[in-house]
Length: 192
Image (cartoon, rainbow, N blue to C red; front, top):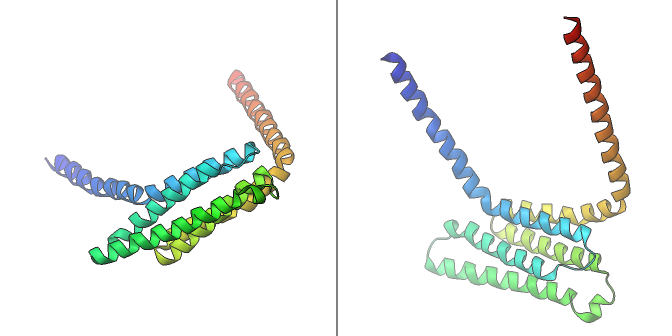
């Protein structure tokens, strides 16, 4: 009987921990989604040589929705909600206008495809950071991560050959040590 009681007590103690983890994941999910969309856009822009204008505009709209949803619980009343929605709508509309200015034909003649994509990502990062200043540090951090991806893309493009060679070298070393360890285990097993 005592064993069953301790089992039930342990079971009830574990349930809130799981729900807290699930709750934390659900609260962070919008930020993770925006970061994942950004990383996908960065990865694709690193491969392609044309701007991803429509994609970055979509990410900007998703970021605006995340900003509104993050600020919603912290606003007091209906008037504050409406003001916050209009403020965020104006903020993200300005970011979208700036992105589209970069896509104008006159500007496009000055920028290459990858440079255009980086400029649009930088505008998105700036918009996210500035929105985060008014809403939450998590959104601010998301903007900083987005901004850091701009030089990371440039560095990756310059270092692609070096990184490829380094990856091949690491894979080769892992295979050599794995095979050596496997051969030593076989020798130890055979001598036993």
